[in-house]
Image (cartoon, rainbow, N blue to C red; front, side, top):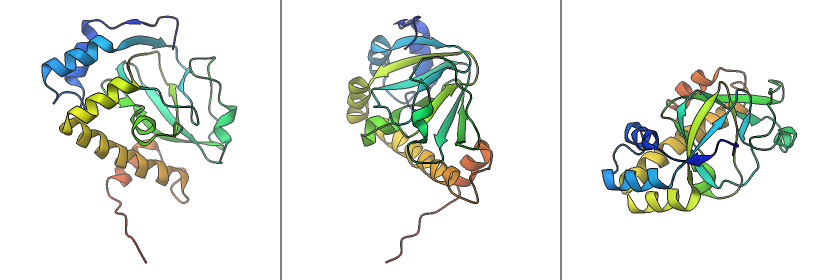
Length: 192
């Protein structure tokens, strides 16, 4: 977290109201989440979360854009600097750009809901302001509100599919927008 970490303001509540995930929550539940959120700022190029680290919070982008990167090789993310540390420029030969997220988008749900380490590195593509919700609060909101749980599960499935496609040949070099478009159209088929 950056040095500009501070309690949330009305902006956090407004952001939750406009968020795809949280807009359907009752105003009282959104208000409780906003009261427990924290504001943080990251300069362009800063690593916000690192693949392989423990997931402990959910992030909602208030302004700016972030890129989501995954290492092409196991343990490849170990060369990424720690969260919030110095800037990082990913090598496209070693990392795949999975998506670009902007205002109102969120990230961090997969590590919280599935457990285990983070599955991607999120880097500030521009200067970014985010609001974070600690893992326990996020998980409680998901458990108490079925609509939120369904929206998060749907997004997780889409991101998992895009991540898989981004790491798999012949799709590894496709732009992030194309991976998401393709992920919406692929269908899993099971064979015995």
